[in-house]
Length: 343
Image (cartoon, rainbow, N blue to C red; front, side, top):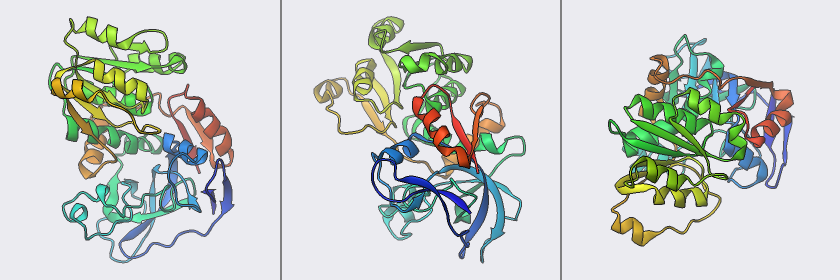
């Protein structure tokens, strides 16, 4: 089968290769990959700015259907339409594994990063990680479940949304627009998104169509001044960072009200110096969130199935695997909402 392989460390070092079809072991299933989203992490792996374990097949935001069951698999059948959580390999014996937090296991290996991923025709995963795709959700839409689960974990399970919260989301990428819809569904009074010049062309319009009360181009306007004016000098109840930008994060803390909640999900390129004295005196509540677990996947599927979160507009840019370079280049520009590959 064809697969997109990061074959060694370094910038680029990625190509289509012929690789064997994986064989499911005990407790695993073999999945025919139907759609895979290009994540910012995939671009970072290409640029050699994110840890990977080459040679490795990249790609992790995937959906597909079961074509083979390994021994011991129960509750699943061939033909089932599924998505999968990502902690495919863990130690099974540490405190995190034993308390249902495998996503935090020190030995966790995720598809597309630590072990072979989904930019290919077939992938094997443990059956215990599977979630069923509702009939009315397409394979292309289901490829959005993984990034949405990231947002759901940080927002719903870690930070929390209270009715009438004033919320600012730093960033205007796909996860940010999913986070916008989650916040609105949970009863936020206003949700503001920030972005940069490249977001004006497409993503700001999409964000407003999905319910954003305002969008701010931080390269042209001061988002802190805007938020303080809108909140009569009090500040935002919740700030959610999905940008990973050090400058944006500092702005986020400056627009957060006293005793406000800051949700950190974006991955910065390096360490950031924080205004610790101000955060302490303001009694800021900071919630760091990484990856996702069972509840966030089920919550995401439920919210989409019940039309609390909509995915129209996310699946307009679809490429075959053979045009992966063109797809990566389009995703890299950052003007479209999401780029999907269909192997």
